[in-house]
Image 1: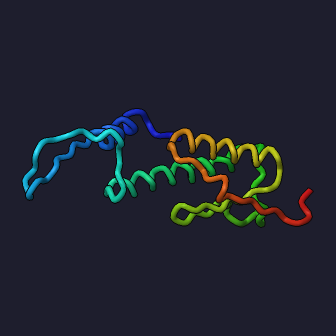
Image 2 (image 1 turned 45 degrees about the vertical axis):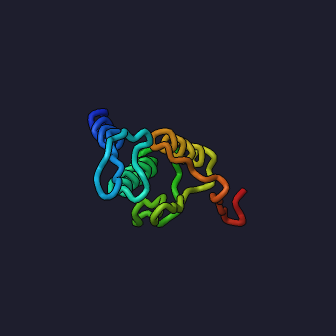
Image 3 (image 1 turned 60 degrees about the vertical axis):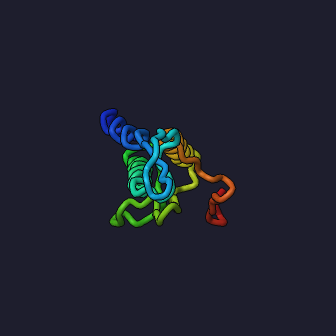
Length: 133
């Protein structure tokens, strides 16, 4: 999704290099290595989520540079808008053109592959104008 290998390596080193100690009666005893990466409530977790969301946003915005992408119909003087995001929810705006929809799916598939996050098909929906053919 556009991150250089060095940056990916640094993030991976931070996430995969966790050591824990067990407190017994308030005293640390022994260490063991984490095998799962970022945990819930880890202060790094929201940062990684924001980085992944930014990569998705940039991927969707890059569609406007593709000559085959037909975006959501707005007046010519309006900014190009193809998605709105809030927390972990996204609304993607597009024409119903098959090529444009395929391009959006390619961005979403690349996001899933790069981030390891899967888009919930069960919670996803799409809506079309009633006169769309």
